[in-house]
Length: 286
Image (cartoon, rainbow, N blue to C red; front, side, top):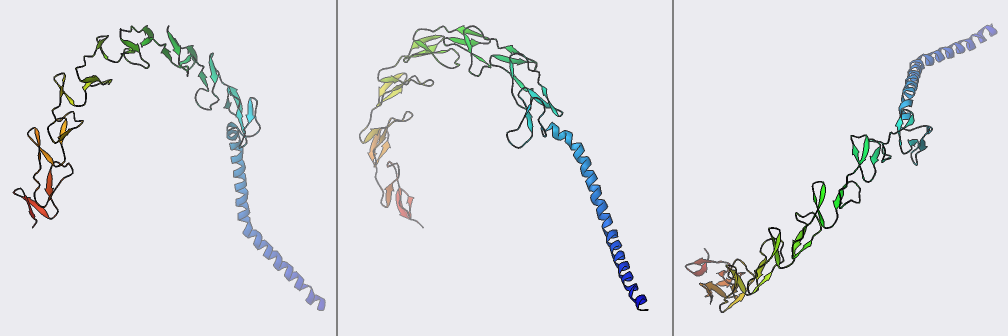
């Protein structure tokens, strides 16, 4: 009886553990199956992605490629372009060079050549008396010649003129004291008491200080008493001293009203603060 009472206890404990183990197994089953499914999907994605990564230059460098200096992977040599998992040679026309850029045609024409139809490089036609510019894709006439369409024509320099740099219409300009007219340089008629302005546009001459232009002449400015000369091309050429006002062609002393002061110009007056003008006088304001 003692043995019979003893053996069932371990048997019952073992059965309970087995049941407990089966319970845990039934709980973990769906999670394990889900993880397994994700593993399969990840494997498929990795298989599909491997050709794309090869196109991006990852993995071992193929022929005509070299490892990147940074970041891993590889790049095609100059003159080659990524094609699938390798590097394919670029068809470079004569008189062109490989750019090494991953976009565009992969080549560019050399100095002195221009691209034609995206397939060839033809020499840039440089006319007589011209030279290629420094960047090599255009030309310029030598000094003394002027570009006319696709040619360089000799500049006919008139008397009293000199050659100019740049792309002016004529390629020359008149020396000081002359003005261009009908392909010639004519002397500028400067009146007495006038001087050359050296301006490229506008008046070719101006009157000296103290003189005013009148119908092509430089007449002396008559400055009245109590006035001084001013640089005023549109006015009288003079202005009244401070404390004087213009009356006709003279400067008369200002009759300053009581409770008034001269304004900023010095040639007019106004009432002090707190006063207002009334019949020529400054009265207290209301």
